[in-house]
Image 1: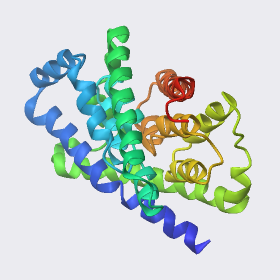
Image 2: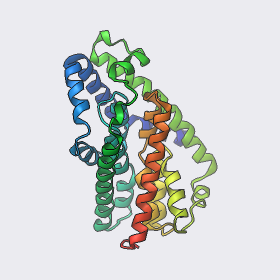
Image 3: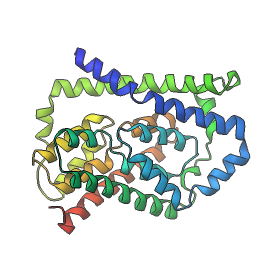
Image 4: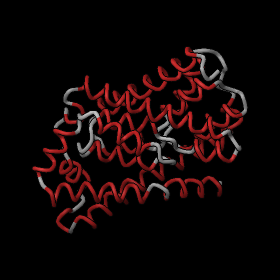
Length: 284
């Protein structure tokens, strides 16, 4: 149990810098730049290159950018397409696991490249069809501040710190409960839910990928390296696996229906991507 607590603390601590910088940026946009800049961001967020930039940011190892993106989306700074692009390209623990196993460089870059390009494409398409994108609920950065009672009058640094502390406690509690469940059930037992069967493998891997914890990407990557699941199934899980990004989204974005829709959209995109990879047979 000591290891569970320590792992939970480490997993949470790694996110703090990303969360603080994100909230600091949001406070700056709200209190220093004002409505003009906010309006410019909203008008520009459906441009095709914004999801591209988001996907590139998501490629950075760990899930810090997906957590940050959730906060920016809740403040209506980025679009839904950009959010999904970041989620799909997020690597979480996949990269260090592959490197530690001595995986061939071409395979590592293939995985990252596929996630990057797939995230870009999905983000652009989603923004094209969403039209109003992330601003449909009409909520903005100041609404998030009012909801969290951050006392913005004390300055953007104190306000950002309050936001960060609030979400950090929430993340730690959830991660601790999840790590405890994994510890009690056992990772070996969890591995038995995977079947190397077409379609079923992608569907199950996608569900595991939804677990808002680095354990999901670790498990999926390990199963692929051990030959338990195929490349398409692994990619389906890694596409969906946005780390704690979804957890932060449900905490900071008050529109529950929208959160559920984003989760379903992410799952559908990830599983579809995995199935398409299997159908091509290129990476069999």
